[in-house]
Length: 311
Image (cartoon, rainbow, N blue to C red; front, side, top):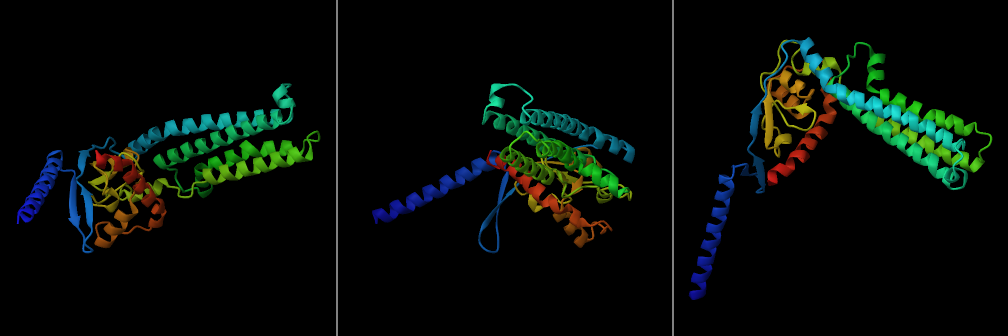
């Protein structure tokens, strides 16, 4: 009997401790809400802290001026890195042809290491420059009225990749003094670097200015009065309860214009599809599959904000 009373007392004490812990968590901000699904599992839903953001522009021209300003630092950074990449390519050519009379270049394997290091630095600069350029293009999309210009603008990094490695490859293959083995190694290295840089530099999911304005309802004078976005990522959300925001505590809200000004130039595909099904947004002629990469960016939002949930 005593053991039964002790067990009952222990259970009651455990329940009180759990209740006290839950009350403490609720008092600290009530940031989590636990719901039970039909399968019996529990799902944690974050209570959002929303900060309203006022839009700065009052016309399409002013909005595009802001997007250009947002993209400028990324484009300048990309150009600087690309210039450095070409400089490293020139240095790699000089090292391969043994123009410099340094012992570590003249003596094997020193000369191999010297041009290989320069080629590696060339690759790094090209890749990071292309990533910055693509980021700038997503913040300030180009018009697709001229298809050729649109492609060249979005994939300038691919052309830079060719410029950054093709001359080195040509010099290597036409060098009559170099041994066949060294030419083969250098040529393979240049081709691999060119392929890697080209694939990374290609924009597989470009955004056009027309798509950005149309999705936000700006080109049709039907801009959305309230959308949501996170600090990270490149999309905005039509619904606050979008699944991609489940782990995001801090949210920003405002018009679709304010979202674009904040660097969120596309609508979340999940929100778009749901809004079209519910009739909240009229389906446009543009292909909503262009937002195919949004889901990944939303997951990035979740990953960036996940740490906040535990705080």
